[in-house]
Image 1 (cartoon, rainbow, N blue to C red):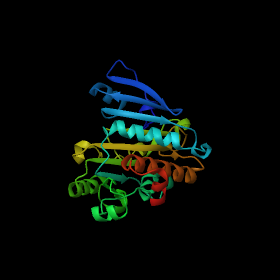
Image 2 (cartoon, helix red, strand yellow):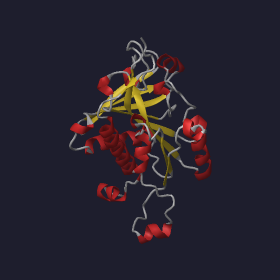
Image 3 (cartoon, rainbow, N blue to C red):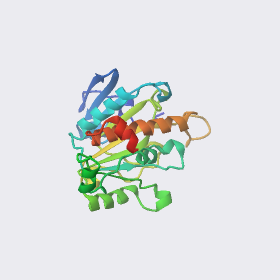
Length: 270
């Protein structure tokens, strides 16, 4: 049975049909980089053309020092954004009322939004080097009646960011990747695709600006179980794992977009 996954790393990444792969290790954290270059490869994998960075780590409840993981996420952001770290829009995708889907909204709660801070106030606070960051949580279609991409596009048209970062929960195929993998890609994301409820894609084509998607798998398609073809499973500690994952991602995003601030200052502002 072909169990769907959002993770490129769980696919057969043969390099003979337009896919390149390599890896790096930073402070003991491995990042696997795959680039889908051709329509043939994209069709076979059912993934858009683009670059995908997969960062693997131990379960977050077992990690005492998350600094190496955050450094790896920042480095991947630097690569996928081509270093664009000013005038950004951060989007927290998902449903805050459903724990496995709450990664995006929880992450958004800890993003340092600065677009509203005037230059005079920055000077008074001695934070002249703050970069411009905005943040929105568009909600889900069932609650708003509006596609997330349409809300994001309206915001993009108004504030004209140089880049969009979309954070969302993902679906994996294997238990080993649940809450132990960060996938980042410059190809954007189709919300709900991991749970067979795919919405309009949030990507450069639809928004008009570079769009990077960042996520952690929180569920597995359990359609292979007898008796229920629409079941998803999630770890029993999902409340703790989602909270910690959102904190790590938010801190990493803040570190990337506010390089003038040390981590202690970032923590005090979130």
